[in-house]
Length: 149
Image 1 (cartoon, rainbow, N blue to C red):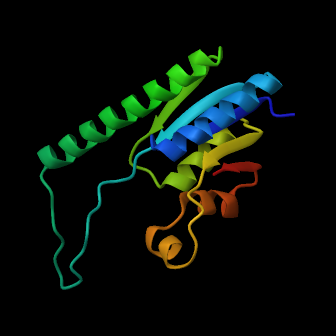
Image 2 (image 1 turned 90 degrees about the vertical axis):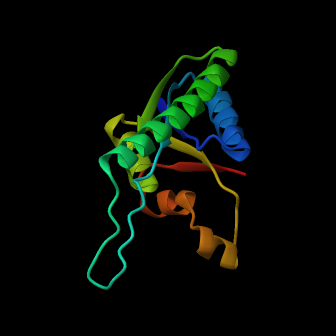
């Protein structure tokens, strides 16, 4: 049914619950696994009064290197979880991207039948203020999404 499962993680404790659940499902179904983490673009703000804050190439490179280092750690941890479950898994870091768009695009490119990700399940103001990448994926994905809490 689900020949390939895309499992998204941000490296958080809750994200790990999503990884563990997705790996258990993949093992039970004999599915191939892709583990993904996405790092967002460097936040650049406009003042709205005719000038923008600019960042040096060095600052931008340091930000990118830091994001890559964090993503590598997240994916190494997820890969270890896959190995403990006796699964092999492809890992994917998508840098400088909008999280929901990158997750959906990766799932489509890899012909995944299911996306697995965690959600805090925030409601009301908390959800409005913090946003919800899971909600965005649910809203825009044509691929089924399994949400783990």
